[in-house]
Structures are given as C-alpha cells and as structure tokens.
Length: 90
Length: 207
Image (cartoon, rainbow over all chains, first blue to last red; front, side, top):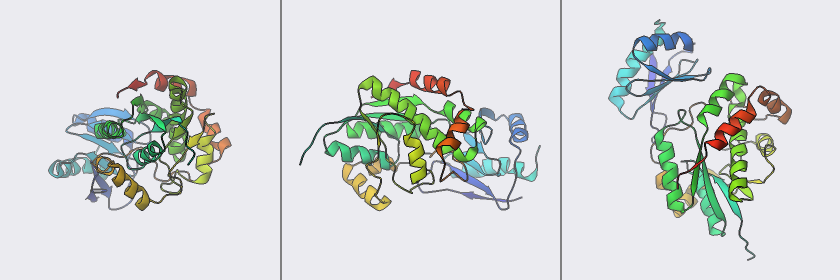
C-alpha cells in the first residue's frame, strides 16, 4: 500500500503520512514491530500510540501517522520504514 | 465609559486566539493570570515555549498544569467522539481550582463560535456546567480574520504562528451537539477526583 507524505500546514512541526486507500492498523501489533526496530513507546492511549526514536511518531488506527520533525529528509526516511506497517509488516 | 477591574484566569495556549482575548481584556483594565494546560506528549515543547513567550509579551503571570495524563484516561475510558469536550471540562476544573487559589472571579478563554467542531453552542453549554464561576469568551462572535487583525495589533501574532504541534489526540469526528447527561454518563467511567487532584497538585507558576 502506498501513501502520501504531507505537511499539514506551513507552521506545523510535523509531517503527516496518509495511506492512499483506507487502512486499518492494529496498534498493538504495530507497537511490537516498532519495538523490534528500537522505537521506544512514549504513550499508548488506546485510540492512538506515540513512539520515539529519531523523533516522535504518532500512529492512529486509520493508518495515519504523524512524523514529528521539521526535517523533510528524516521524515521521508522514517515514512519508508514505518510505512511498511501499512503493507502488513509484523 | 464605566470601567471596573476584574481578576480572571485566562486559559492560555500557544495559538492565536487566547492571547488575543487576553489582550482585549487587558485593554479594559482586567487583571489576568495565565493558565496553560500542558498537553505533552500530545503536543510538543514548542507549544509550551510559545505560551511562555506569549505570557511574557502580555506581561501576565503564568501557571502550568499537567494535562497529558488526563487525556490518556479520557481516551482509554470514554467515547472517543467526546474527547475534546471531556478534555475541556477537565481543564476548567483545574482553572476553577486555580481561580480559588489566586482570588480570581472568572475564567476567560479564546473560544469563538463554530471555529472548531467542539465550539458549538450545545457543547459550550455542556462545558459551562462544569464549574461555578463564569466562563467568559470575549471572542465569541469574532471571525478568524478579525481575531488575526487584533493579534497583530497586540504583537502576539508572530509568536503564535511560530511552528508547533497542535493537539494530536483530537478524534476524527468530534461530537458537535453533546448533551450533559451523555457527558456525565461517560465521566462516571473516569477517576475524576484523582484526575483533578493530580492536575491541581501539579500546578506550577512558571512566570
């Protein structure tokens, strides 16, 4: 599954990753996968989770993700990696 | 013009609206005490930095209280459509406690009607029920263009528009016409007393 990488607004401090098609992300499975890749869990609020490695990343059940950095190159690199979750990476 | 001085808590964020509301009332001689509900990790450090800079610019004292832990409890235990409403009711409980502590008679915020989904008349009515001191909204009938014009005059616009992260736990479809019984039903699922105690005991004056 492919995705868009967007900057929500000019003064936003994050990039948004949005799946092209409606997706469903199992947040608990995603957390396990991310842990193996050295992401640290910041918070699990049930309706969304926040993890951190180079920067914080928010994940939502709809497959939407927020890459909390101003660095476009880092956002692209992280999008390629966490975007694998939308392809069913476990 | 008849003027009188009121001491009030201003719910201050790093955005455009609340500093504008503060400025408008300062012009009328109101004495304001800022309260910022610290929403990390659902926002970032830049939001708190901006709020401090805005309070400094306005020349008002600023208090901060932790709010992230309350957001988690609301998200985990209630209907996600009500997240914003329950969040705001929690904020006003803390604000009312601070008002008592500093001798303020009202709570001020930067809400204007219909600007975001949670700011509808039915929702504002539900929010107002949460505390026994008045919640006042100087911007209620203003549109965004007018608010930005006043923010520029006040010198807060450039600080408010620095990069930061807005709240990231906002539901995709927030309730726009919640009722008090519906909200109270969900609040019964929350350890409200503990949440308020945690927030109030975490109050710190930072300016």
